[in-house]
Length: 430
Length: 154
Image (cartoon, rainbow over all chains, first blue to last red; front, side):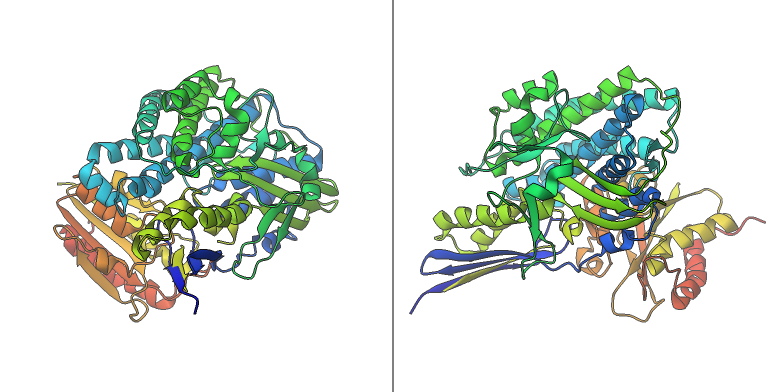
């Protein structure tokens, strides 16, 4: 009779949203891995139908409390695409500034509060703080710097209200920009210290052959704009996304899985952005990556914590660059008129590519909306990682295997709330 | 001695707005010498709100299987209360219990910290407070004034 072993994580901690992981092991072989997402469907795409195109950034910002800016940015770019308008110059720069704030907030939350405890044998940030209070204080300071950017450009720290199609509702004063720049100078040192801290963690030997997918822009590390490219030759306009990618329903998840039609699962997020855009990091961020021992490409998902730290250096550095160059826009927004049509855009959420598609009628009412978040694009790759990760570790007792599987899932900083939207791990051994 | 009263929750989700609504009541009626604040989402922001206070009173919605509007008072000044806190509703990565224990570990917890939990009935987006929760705020305001040893200004 076959020996079966089931490992279950029924309610996974330190991820955003509600999910579970089921692993079936039969005769010392991994038979099945399912990342089950059971957070109820959230119907945002249906809420959007019938609403004005101008409401999309405020409605979609409610999809996630961790990365609302990403939803707002993909929404405004898609709407501007539909209206045939391009927002450029100082307004475009201020959108990048706002995105810097969200990357800092989100990356630092994940590095310090959610992921670092795994590497240091702690079950949560409170245990980490008991042993390393000064490190956790640094993380809190750095996260606060990100909050300050989002609060200034977005109007408040969570679910920003200052973003509109065409630009912003209010542009901060020169004095407010100067105050923010002063606060960020100290944050740059904290960001560099973060890279120096996490590079010393012990990483499992787990290099994977991924197809990385991210935005790519000729002149800048991508936030808002660029072509969608991959490490295996994909190079497309965001408008052509649906010709190359397809969402499919899997019974164990309320979030759809997204695949490349030609080649199946792929990976979005910090490792993908880094691999495809390394040369566009600021000199300080590139140096930090080199000092951390990262090559131009990093294929070990456990080292995503280092790449997030490098991207945090970049985000602080880029925010300061924008603030120092500060050219205040003459108008807070570009005026635009709706027209019937289709708008598509992708931006780089902290967890990876976030694609929005909308169709508008001639009054600018939304008749169709499709939102493809990074976690749903990464789900199949998370499952593939787990199959390969578990196979050589079957000798481990269930508790230890469960811990390591959770850590492997957290490599992705999955935002389950976004993709549908807590995770439990079940390992069954037969 | 400085006191901060923090209302935790989302005003747009029915009874989750109990904390902010209580803060609104105190602000409208006047409460001298007390700092009032609202924490709508990110519980890590509570650490910053606690800084500099010697007394902190926090009000949050909870789901503890009690009757809607029931109020529970926890004095967490000196003892961890994580187990009890798991009954408090939070959809965020860092819950209120984690934030309080993190503040304690980092030496950022005021000497006196009291948490009031108000049993919620409804978390429907777009709804206002339910009747029982609205009614509970009257008595809760009195209790908090007693905690502060404060009275309305005349």
